[in-house]
Length: 122
Image 1: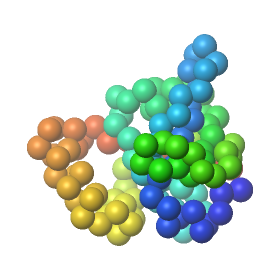
Image 2: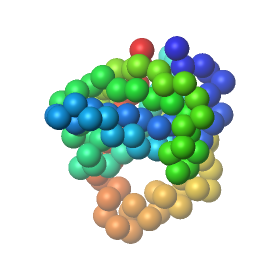
Image 3: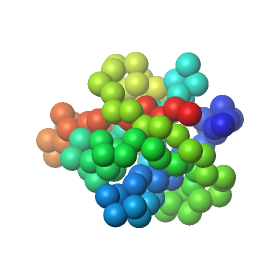
Image 4: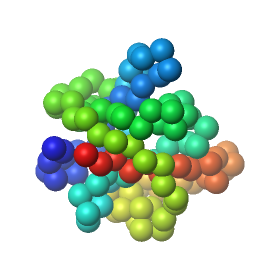
């Protein structure tokens, strides 16, 4: 089980499965919802979102911003979900100025409407 104490950590390394069976690790931002599930933000056209559509079984572990894992891997199921203002509030609260800059850059680049939220649960 993913500990609630992980919610203060900045990054997860999320492993998603390719069609050939290989696992692709990607460091991602995440937030903890009140129901104990985690939410990850990604681009709807990203490889991880495409892989989750095919194989919802994933693994996650704590990591640094470069993806170097320092926690145990946990098996999770990923579900692609609709955007919610509540999720954005959680990300803004956790990541502060860093997330505001990310949002500003995504608006400038036109990627703002290409967001996909991923729910991770055991």
